Image 1 (cartoon, rainbow, N blue to C red):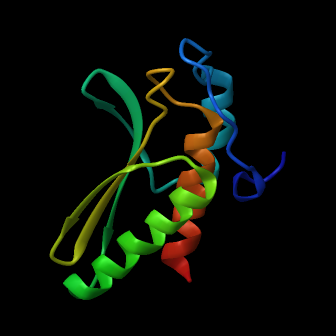
Image 2: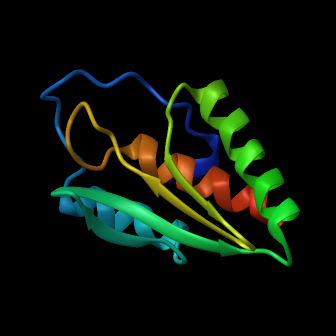
Image 3: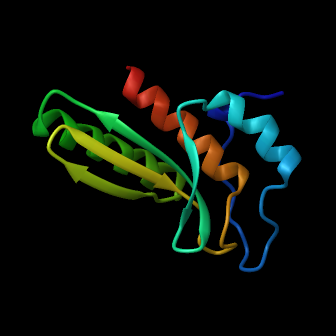
Length: 113
């Protein structure tokens, strides 16, 4: 299987298909630190990243923002002192898509670098 970090986001159409259980089971092992959560009735990927201070957390938020703009797929970001919560979902389909798993993997790569 192609690694999620190599996937380029594709536009989703309103009402399009959400990720199947088989797809989720194939993608999830590549992003083990992410939880699948219910976010206002919509399945989302969520992870909390921890930093030594606010400045590092803010720099990470800016990196994720640049990635989001490049891929034209945007997360919910919650910035706090030394902590960033990232949620990926595809609002047009009201659920998870391969794009979300890909962006989660790319977010992990940013954090690791």
